[in-house]
Length: 133
Image 1 (spheres, rainbow, N blue to C red):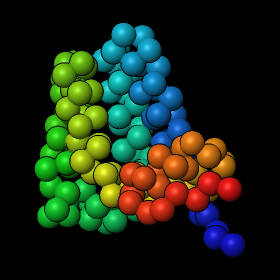
Image 2 (cartoon, rainbow, N blue to C red):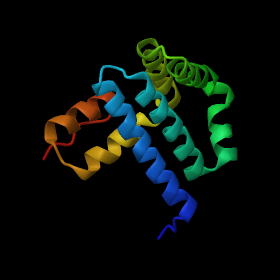
Image 3 (cartoon, rainbow, N blue to C red):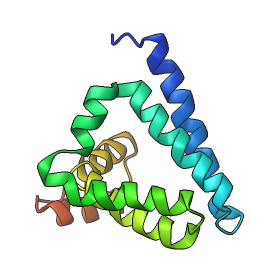
C-alpha cells in the first residue's frame, strides 16, 4: 500500500479546492478573481503533491515547453484580468501538456466501468481489436 504524507494530503485538498474554484469561476461567466484563485490553488496543490523539483521538471521538459508556456501564459493572462482569453490559452496548454496522459486515464476509467459502446470506440481509437462479449 502506498503511504501518503501529510504534505501530499494538503496538496490533494489544495488541488481539489483549485478545481472547484476554476469550475465555479467558469460557471459565473469567467469571474477573473475566482479563476485566478483556482489557478493559484491548483498549481500550489500540484507542487505539494509531487514536490517542487518534480513540478519544475515536469513543466520545463524540452518536449513540453510549448504546452508549459501556453499553460503558464494562460494563468498569467487570467491573473492580469483577461479571463476568457486566458482560459482559452490555458486550456490549449493543458491539452498539450497532458496529451500523453489522456489515453492512460481513459483506459483506466473504461476498465472501471464496462460500457460496451465506449469500449468499442476506445479500442478503435487506439487501434486494437474490439472486445465486446
